[in-house]
Amino acid sequence: MTITQLQYVLAVAEHKNFTLAAEKCFVTQPTLSMQIQKLEEELDIQIFDRGKKPIQLTTVGEQIVSQAKNIVNESGRIKDIVDQQKGYIGGDFKVGIIPTIMPTLLPMFMNNFIKKYPKVNLIIEERTTEEIIRMIKNGQLDAAIAATPLHEETIKEIVLYYEPFVAYVPENIPAYNKKEFEVEDLDLNLHNVLLLQDGHCFRHNILNLCKAKGLGNDNHFQIESGSFETLVKLADEGLGMTLLPYLHTLDMGDKANKKLRHFKEPRPSREVSLIYSKKELKLHIIEALRSTIAGVVRGAITFQNVEITSPLQKK
Image (cartoon, rainbow, N blue to C red; front, side, top):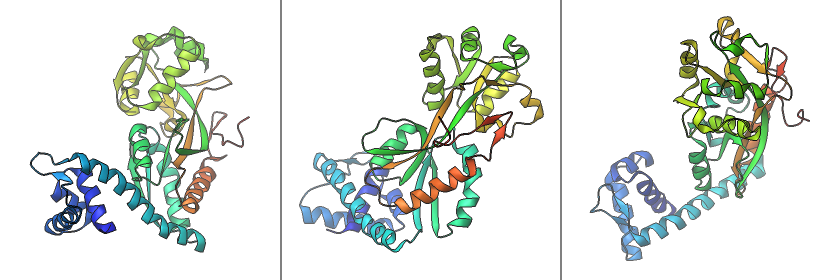
């Protein structure tokens, strides 16, 4: 039994296809199939039911895959220990970022990070919060950037910043005439609020905000789209107002800026954190990523007297 054989098993278990698994492992399909077959012969069991389409794990195969994940992940930590001891900051580092953060935050820090840490190969994946939690637990991601808290015992969270919510209000909405918003103003406009589809954590941030204030219920909201860009366009067509994360509003232009309404203090906001498994050993890269993002965000972004605050700044 070898680590390579276990890696091949995990690839087939994930992709449910020998050819695709071989491509992901950068080997030929016959090579991958032969190694898995050798492992099955050594163990005298069948890991995969090849008669089903797509390929399925056998009962014992499911147990083997579960243990194989632990073995492969732990074997990779040996190099992490050596790198950390030597102070080497480099190698592959897989990061997941949720869709409502990735388009705005990634361009802000990526170039700075690459220049400062050229030996680190950042592999960025856009993933939902649910996918991120699963992939971190399975060792498929080294870290992620997501809205928190997640309340996951095996995952550590380092707060990067607190991002205010901003209202985007077209001229046909009465609230357009207000210079600043209060959370209670949402109660008067619930039937006009356009939000992201279910499954996006930003949508739940807003719903939870209203519930905390005792405002409205889910049935008042129109769930129209999976992107902020579409929500803004729908609002411009007179179909309602929407709520945006602050960073998304920075490059909207003068015409759109006239429709932005910031909330009065204390401004409602979401907590954005760098998260990773408590077993993670690439802490030197995590710290490099944290310091780069915090350095770019902290104090560098101000707009109409609104600041993105770091944990140290927030009182």
